Amino acid sequence: MKQKNNNLIPMISITVLFFMWGFITSLNDILIPYFKGVYVLSHFEANIVQLAFFIAYFFGSLAFFLLAKTGKDPIHKFGYKTTLEIGLYIAATACILFSIAAMLNLGFGFFLCALFMLGIGLTFLQVAANPFVAMLGNSETASSRLNLSQAFNSLGTTLGPALGGYFIFSVFIENSEGAYAVQTPYLILGLLLGLLAIFIRTSKIEEPIKKQETSSSKESIFKYPYVWLGAIGVFFYVGAEVSVGSNLVSYLTSVSNGEITKDIASSYLSYYWGGAMIGRFLGAVSLSKIKTNLKIIYMILLAIISFGIIFTINYSLHSLSIHQVWFYIVFMLLNFFFFYLGKSKPARSLAIFAIVNSILILVGMNVFGNLGYWSMWSLLAIGLFNSIMWSNIFTLAIDRLGDKTAQASSILIMMILGGAILPPIQGLVADSFNIEVSFIIPLIGYLYLIFYGLKGYSINKKN
Image 1 (tube, helix red, strand yellow):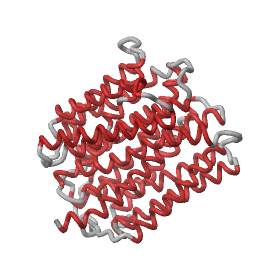
Image 2 (image 1 turned 90 degrees about the vertical axis):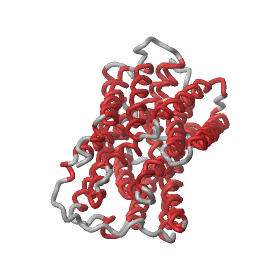
Image 3 (image 1 turned 30 degrees about the vertical axis):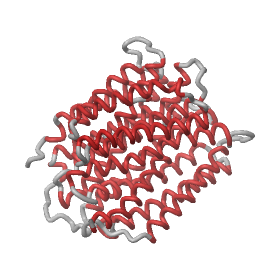
Image 4 (image 1 turned 135 degrees about the vertical axis):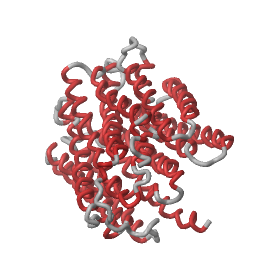
């Protein structure tokens, strides 16, 4: 009981962190169509927003990895708490610079530099927070805890498009020139991140384990196939998730022939990110040690509450009625069914959900014919099945590594690089063909995840 109480404050603090960086990350999906209009950019040029943001994860994590090999990275030297503080201060500074760039109208390039700095700050949070949560308790329920924290991350990504789209496209855009509409939102975010850093600093948070020493083994982490295959899985998962989210607004405005405006498309986008929230809450219960009968009750209640949050926000801000969104409830029921097929097994659930997402993308691409709103909602429903992928890949890839966990974590976070690479490639395909065909890029990512969930996660793990 004492251990649970000791873990309560760290879990609350990390959960708030997950929420904040989810909110900030999903705002990129609003910045893409916004900057596309302000600076008259092509699909490829607009997706450079994601390149600037996610390439920072690669360079930041690479630095962590190289330092971790000698025990000089912030986690080894200062611990998880200080590493989280550093990340928050960097991210807060980046948001304030973003606001200044908007106020002075410094141009698209300066925004990209600020987004890179923001990505560096979030790299500190990612590298420290994920293994931190995984170690706050029994290793068998690590996926459950990560899914819970990721659920609040998805709450942030749900509110980001809805609130961000409303303020940027409806409130602050009025009577503004250049990129002025993003000034106030990012100034507020910067201040909130600074306050959160102060809260973390003043909170009594004990490290879940003693600070790790440098591994006495000279064996390379790359000799563990399931680790580097998992890193590739992170690359394709993040790349696919970000690619779909980045191009949904363009997809919705295109296939609707202008009937869906950018403002309304942004609200639909919150159902995509909200699906990840719903699925992660369900995953936290499904992968836990709760008795089966209680699992079903908790999952139903969490699904109803989560959907209620998404619906209420979008109905209040954008007047999206139940008549317009009832399709989503059908996919939520399917999500329940596939959770059941997953049998609370991380690898099995990952493979099943990757198969489902592959099919949903094919429907959205109209491979089976134009299904109207079902095509649109199939792409939006991908978020429901993205839900457990990050936590399941991460825990499968760091399993049984002991003092090599920090190195592996750095490699996995490094492969968030997929979020930088795949969206611009999808933008190029969209410019060359059309927006529907471009979704073949995230489809490739989900096909790889089918392999990792079926086979890749277990290669050489026993040894």
